[in-house]
Length: 74
Image 1: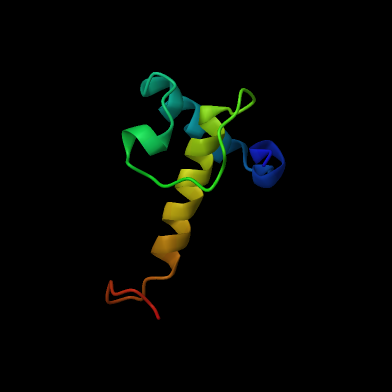
Image 2: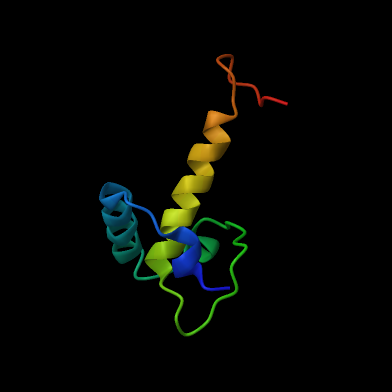
């Protein structure tokens, strides 16, 4: 699966943050650093910063599902 096509967006702040974190982590993907399960298959075209962007999106999505009391919405 081409992660670039899956993760295209118009959010330069998120892209810059992902690139910054990726550089701080020596180019390692969040799967290695954070133990994050990624749904993408890595290939030579895989850009780790795009994995970080996806990781941040998943965290935000998970947080948005929590209600005010801090419990998972379900």
